[in-house]
Image 1 (cartoon, rainbow, N blue to C red):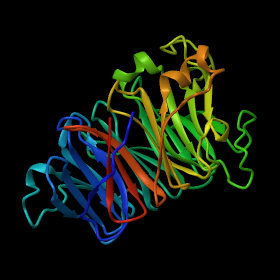
Image 2 (cartoon, rainbow, N blue to C red):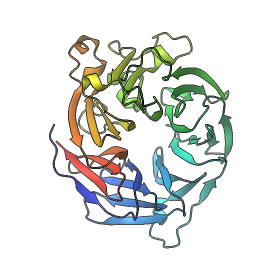
Image 3 (cartoon, rainbow, N blue to C red):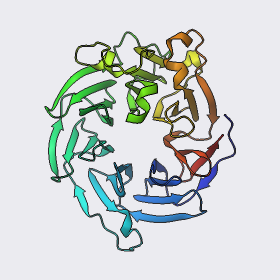
Length: 353
């Protein structure tokens, strides 16, 4: 795997905060920024295609409506706004739906695989579940986190469950139909954690869960980006399930947990974002970005193969940057692209081959 000098996407007036890539239209990338704007880019073209002024506050997170990418959700302050892509040419574009159930700033918005629910994680530690069809609050998940809830992800093979992570160093599995937690891992006291960075708390900054068509090769896992520099690959079925068994774990070669830390050339500062790749063999690579100004591409197949764990040659590619990483995603167009939002207003696109 090799890398060229990055292409630069310009459109924001201040730091870019988030980026997502279209599955239906390869090469379409959407970014958000602290300027309160959302920018649309087509990697086949030179300039920004459209800009949406969402509000006066930073736009912290974006997601498409699953299966219907003409609908975009954006979190701005404590509000979620949705936009119809078909009206992007309208200078007076306004959100056609808005949700204001959160008291504090929303850190991440995600849509489940059936396009029936949205989940919002906020600074109070709460997670709001919204019924998209009824356009109303379905459940509030509370008392799982004692600090900021920074990240949330639905679990594709568990249709009524979500994972959340927070700045209390906890990873929580919820049954959102019942509104209660099922399992909590506290990385701050977890005996399996050994970062070698005693001054950096094991805050959970980001969670990635493989899409359902990746599960056959990866197993039913999640990736956790931590403030102490570790990226954990965790077998959800064996470590987070109600009974703690490996029943239904998907792939027999998936170990309980793999920690990608300093001993395998991991990050030297907080990890801010993780994502499973959409390029090459989809899901094979896990990509992490951190405050150490690096992006690391890990070979998941090697990480999760217990026969290769003694080798521990997991790092596939290291990319040195000049700024800290806020967010990243992957996209396919004419080439296989890694899109990185750092602490500047310019979004970088690395062509990976």
